[in-house]
Image 1 (cartoon, rainbow, N blue to C red):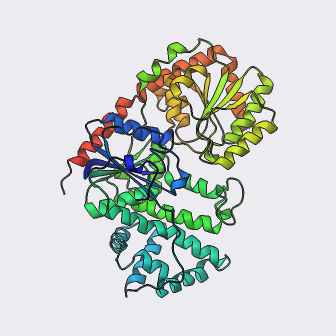
Image 2: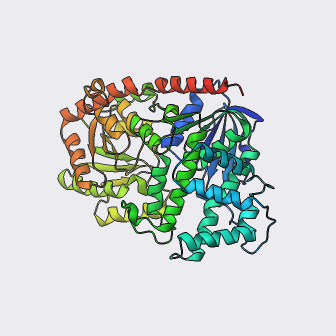
Image 3: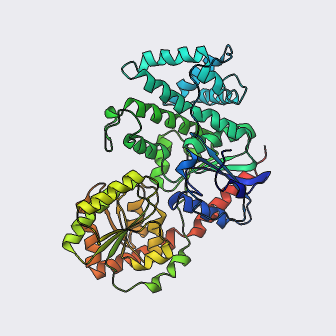
Length: 513
């Protein structure tokens, strides 16, 4: 475990009931999944939770953003990319069947399908990835056999690309496999594992399930491979990437494709190792099945919030809509803050008394945050568009007329539900479950009315028009406010979510090997 500024304060236990597996979220990142994790731990005070945080490098994370509940009795911090993959020139002892296993691992991760044979092979391979095993990291990095195999794959699949870029991409992609195996070998004993994504956390959960035989529960707030694909398309550190969001699969950069194949492969493995697979809404459950999840293990459990907490804020707001539209979220590309800023320019031109706020941390991607501020200044929005940084929702929501999301990807955003409970309608792009939240799902739900407006992705004009419709018309705004209140109280109460997760936890903890 890598030293962290708060590592001496971390709780430690020899065993836990439920071990949460977290990738880049709680307790270091505010909002979204992290808020959900905090509520889950706090909502089951009788369960002894542990958590394994898996991140990139220590310097990518600041101080913890959340307190640690008393029933979080164990917390580990691990970083996958805090050291280089290793010296290229060393030699390593080889075993006769090591290359056979390596070839099988690549074949199953990249062939795009899954089978019982793949399951058996990957289980066998991972048993030999432990320190001292036949397929350990030292063998992969330093043996002549591995070097020849990598050169062979380069000549067969990537001879038009830079060999140096290829070799380091291969090493960087594979290094976490052995790091995660090491973590699993020393991990705290648990009654059951609960991974909050596929990806590295899901892969760790798969290894732990394989080693211990204890149940694995997988929850996906968004579809990890979809969101990771967006991140990879936009990443400037991947050589050859085009700027912007690539939508044509034929345009995908070769090295981006390597990363995507890897994440899709370990995602399929996590699906097949999981005993229960939870999506936030039905469309994502169907997407999980299309991506390889066994249908009979999937279930939809919508997020829920503490409605009473936010309902108390209704008394603090005015009867007419405050002329403030607030984007609540991190200042990162996936939230498409630039589209909101361009929409703000249209709104101010039509309704100058309006203010537009951005409430969320801006330290995750400083370069993007700087670009957003520069765009705001270039459009002359000084004094009208404000970057507030992280804000406490209990203080923020009574002051605003609209919650706005301009994201290019979401799952089931808690902030929309929290706004509804406080009587604040929403304007959102058509991503994730946002249309379901704002317009309703089934007939009874839709009959409650529209709790705001939904517009297309990356369309600042449409976003601005939707904001103006609600803020300029008190009757429309009040009807949307009441629709949101009814919907969140009926379908998205936190107790409904807790009851369904308690059933899953109790089933997992009662499972006998």
